[in-house]
Length: 139
Image (cartoon, rainbow, N blue to C red; front, side, top):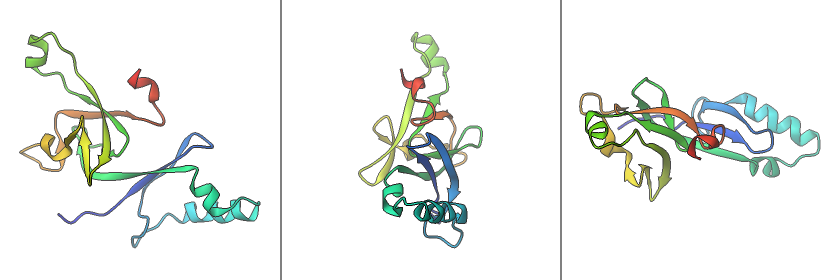
């Protein structure tokens, strides 16, 4: 698999998503992030101090059923199946996490859920938010 390593950044101070799809060390890098850090450094804030206020979330290389990119920390809703409905259950919410060198959904490797028709798509899931912008979804 040949994929580009991408990130998005959550800022714990401003409580907002700053950047999405930037390459940390790749050929394309978000110069706006660097400019912001330089500007804040000149205003008396240390670069490393500011870095510690940010949460970097890695792109999994996979998209949900609607073509939305899936990142570490995303909240996914599993589509209701006939079997779930027949058993009286509802669609579940799961969080994408990176642990033990793999992206996981509900403690299982993300590739367990990939579409057989399109191996880069989580056919039975859709991104409905993330841990940082939408924590209320998990309550």
